[in-house]
Length: 136
Image (cartoon, rainbow, N blue to C red; front, side):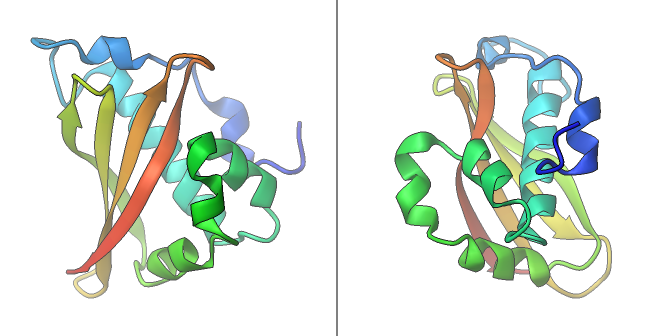
């Protein structure tokens, strides 16, 4: 086991591709959407200990956007404002191979956020393209 990865990453099943988001595919419950949500959850949980999981965070974002994430502190502040988060598919964009994942608190207070996931064919993985917050 890689000590730099959160414990749950070692149990992740085979990834389903953005091609599984073809028009007419059963969404939002398809395996590709579930995989995107799972990777978004891994990213968000790693943000809560961003210093320890820095390499993991860097590996989960679209490579061209890495500089824009800085030290991940802005994204970490978003997650710190969401007590007891849950992760749900919020929308899909099959033409882009993209899934929006809603992150919201299971408690009545707090913030919620959206994580945009995109399928990267070259490496065969879902990666984080962006994250935004909004008041609950």
